[in-house]
Image (cartoon, rainbow over all chains, first blue to last red; front, side, top):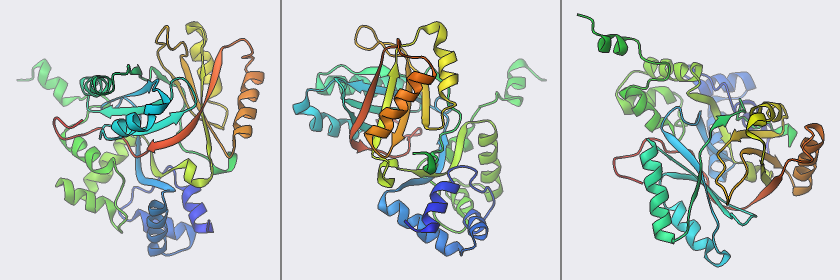
Length: 149
Length: 178
């Protein structure tokens, strides 16, 4: 990883400039050109290290979301995971090592939308879906400090 | 004449989102464009001004509708291959106290209370720990148990396996799209 990549990943997870030219402002702070910043972010996006440069919404302030869990027979995991990932409303979808082995986040404009997605997944797979919506968010900041892991 | 309804419209609630906010969210939820004037480009797409986009983003940040604005990383691609969701079965009376305690550990990246679903699921406090390998993550769980005296609190560590999908949330969808 280059110094510029590390600086962009570690120093700009929050407080992205709200000026007309944010990338040029970042470049000025780091002593590089705007084009270098844009090219590096483009490269990090293409390699998959960066999901996006953008907002993280606080859950439940816009729309609705839930964390869903399913206990899928191992032989069916790939099939069920592919079906779940096919929903536009599903953003994260992970295998976890547990009897409940498939975990995914469903988001949408309102709770009816979430319930419709969960009901359809249940009907399509014949497997019950646990819905575990957030009740309280104790954590303040989602930024991930690279130095502490 | 001012009616109660008009007054309510004149003084929107803290997180009220109007039609322009909704369009703005729909356009930015996948990320800002990587161009010199990203807010101007967003403004063009939703039919407003660059200044209006910046003002509205500033407002959503100050109201905490947007938790943060910036680079969103994919941990696995950066070498943080071990990712564990640690779930705890905490008495309802003490779940808030423990939640506020756990969030002070800098290696915890998320900490939520969620409902139990008995009998299948008895855990009501969830936190996320990322690390370069499993041993590091497990050592951190031990540290939590030790420092918060959680020896008698039932908990499980759910390591992630395959990632089937990861991208930004889509809150605004065309009608009927699931």
